[in-house]
Length: 211
Image (tube, rainbow, N blue to C red; front, side, top):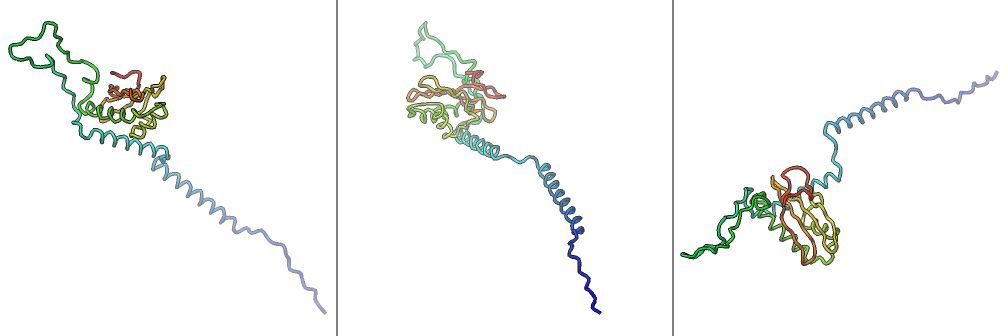
């Protein structure tokens, strides 16, 4: 007598064993993520590309200031101009009764800038004026581009504004405790760049400078 074979079930059971392994893998991934977050927090916030670029430009600006002033004396208060007649009179001569004796200044760049800044200001004035003399149309955009090309960064350029054919600007050149700033007017061959005195501390404000 032939027995009828019993059919083998084809129903696939759901795999239950891998589920704990998947859960453990998920927990491990979360742990690694948390670990990475803690390490980032311990090391401080990462610098953005803009911050890195700003730091590099600031370092280049400081290096430029040092290079311009490398032949200048150390920081020291300038000596007051001598008083008295402008020239020595020959023996036996007396100055005319209407002679005016020069008076030593009591305020302004002559008194408030140290020797290093006074010397450096002349060098900055010359290099900037020469670069702006050949500018036919001194718009704020072109003036800024020339100043940037000379190493003066945007953070130190203030009050850049055009009036007619002249573009006015100010440069904050404070460095090593100095108070130097420049007041410039770009107008082609009539370009003028003068020294001025900025506050010793705090933000630079062109309207509150001492000149």
